[in-house]
Each structure stands twice: as structure tokens, then as C-alpha cells.
Image 1 (cartoon, one colour):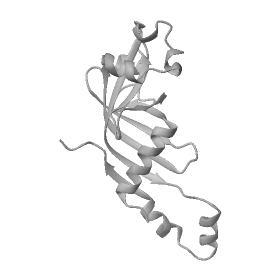
Image 2 (image 1 turned 30 degrees about the vertical axis):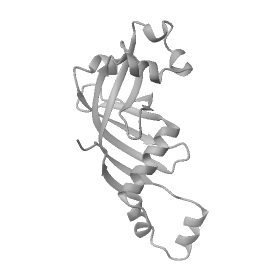
Image 3 (image 1 turned 45 degrees about the vertical axis):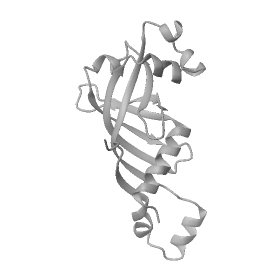
Image 4 (image 1 turned 180 degrees about the vertical axis):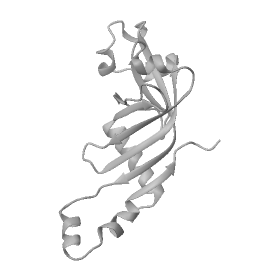
Length: 164
């Protein structure tokens, strides 16, 4: 049996490992999420994304915007929809800290590339699902286990915003 706190812990662990999300703005004319690589500073964020200033996502940002991302871990056992606030950041220390060869491959001018943008996502709340489908789960169903009952402790709404 999983508690909401345990689901949240599994989510953060999976996100730090698998990092690809589909990120988009809420309530904008261009609401199509895009694949982005999440980088987490600390245990629970904020979550950072490198992008180019001339992308539709960066151009749509006017201050702090409501955004969301969806996530599926590589082994498909953790899924989440995460809501929060997205903003452009000029935090040079964070650019320095998060910079790596994969990011560098996208920006010819390196950390000082004039088209480099850093996005900050402050997670507020999420719905997290665990899918522990396995041979063992299939056997349990064959033996009469109710899949709805088995699944009820594998999903939770969690608050991700840090209390201040």
C-alpha cells in the first residue's frame, strides 16, 4: 500500500533519473506540450529547462505563467501530471551549475549564446500514478483480486509546493 508521500518520493526519484517531460503552458493559444529535459536543483525543485529564446514556448512567456508537464518514467511504472508556474530566468549561477555537454550541443555560443534561455518551473501540485503491472499482478487478478481495489492506493493528488 502506497501513501501520497511515498508516491511523491517515487515521482521525484523517477524524474531525476528519466528527466524527459512534455511541457506546455495552460490557457494559451499554443497549448501543445513539447518534449523537454528536466533538471532538478535540490530534492524537490525548482525544475529547470534549457531552451532557445526563439522557441514558441519561450516567446509565449510573459512573466510567470501557469504551466504543466506530463511525465512517464522509462520503465512505465510512474506517471504524473504536474501543475506549476513557469518563468524565464537569467540566473547565471544556475546556468553554470546545470550546464552539461548535452545542453552545450544545442548552443554554439556556449553559456553565453545570445539565444540561450533558462526556464524555471515551480511545481505546485500533481497527480501521480503507479503502474506496478507485472506477472505478479496478473497472477493476483487470475486468483480473483479486484484490479480497482488493487489500484486505489497507487494514485494520489499531492501538493509539491514547499511551505514557507
